[in-house]
Image (tube, rainbow, N blue to C red; front, side, top):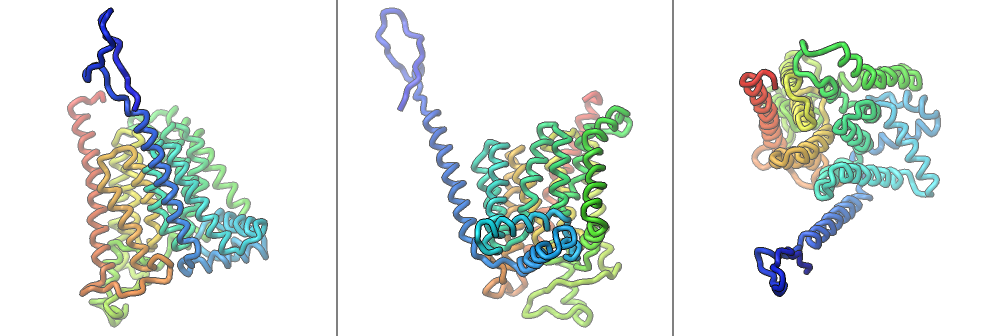
Length: 438
C-alpha cells in the first residue's frame, strides 16, 4: 500500500513518519477497486438480462412480427398504415431495420428482435453511465428495465436512448439538441409527450407570467419551437394521415385500466364485485380488465388525472427551473397519468423508472422513491405476465387478489411523490415571501 507523507520534517531529523503527518494513501487503489467492482456488477446485470433471451414475451411479440411482415411486403410507409394500431411510426421503422439486420446476420427474426432489445438496453444504460459517471446507478437502470424489455418483449426500450440523450442535453442547456432527441423518443412511443409541457416551462426559465419577455419567447421558439414545427410537417409528410389516426387511437382507449395497477384497477376490482351483472364477477378471485366509455365511470379518474397533472405543472411553473426540479415535477406529472388516467397499460410505468433513477442521481434523498417506483413497476409486469410473458404458474389470490393490494400501494406512493413536489413548492413560496428578490 502506498504512503503519502508530509514534508514537514526539521532539517537534520530522520524522516520520522508520524500518523498525524503521514497518511495511508489508499484512496487511489481503493477507487480503482471500486471502479472494477462497478464494472463487474454492470457486466453481471448484462448477463442476467441475457438469460431472458429465449423468453417468448407477451402476445404483443406476435403483433411486432405482423408489423415486420407488413413493412417487408408493403414498404415501411404503407406497412405502417396497414398496422392500424396506436403507435408512432418510428417503432415500425426500427422493427423493419431489425428484420433487415437479422437477414444480414442470418438469424431468425425473433433472435434479431431480442438482440435489438439487448443492444438498446445496454446502450441506454451506458449512455446514462457516461452522463452520470455512476456505473452502479447505470446497473440499477439496466436491471430495472430488464423485465419490460428482455423478458416480456415490449418496445419501450427503443425510445430510452433518445430520451436519455434529451435529458442530458437539457441538463447541459442544449435545448435544440434536447428537442430533436425528445421528438425522436415521442415518435417511437407516445408516452414521452406527457413530459412536453414540463420541458417547455424548463426552457422558459421563468417563475411568473409577468417576467416573460419577448426575447424569452423568441429564444424558446428558435431553440425548441422550430424543431417541433419541423416534426409536425416532416412526419405527416412521410407517413401521411395515419400518424394522426394512430395518435387518436392511443388517446381513446376504452380500457378502464389496461392491466396497470393503479386507481382504475381498484375501480375495476370493485366493479366486478358490486356490478357483476354488468361487468362479470371475479374469476377465482381474480379481476380482469374492463373496457368501458361510460362517462359515469371514467369521469372521476380523468378528473383526478387532469387535476393532479395541472397542479404539478402549475407548481413547476412557479418553481426554480433547476434540472433536479424538472425531473421531480416531470415524475410527479407522469405518475399522475399512470395512476389516474384511463387506458394506461402495465408497461407505461417504464418511463417512470428512467425518471426516478435520474431523480435519485440529482438528489440522493429520494432512495425510497427510487425503490418504490422500480419495484412497483416491475411487480406490475410480474403479477400479470410472470417472467416469460405467459402469466404466473400459480394463483395470485391469497384471500384477496394481490393486484388490488399493489394498486392501493401504488396510489399511496403517488401521493408520496406528489407531496415531495408540494413541499418544494411551499419552500420556494416561503423563500420568496422572505426575500422577494430571490
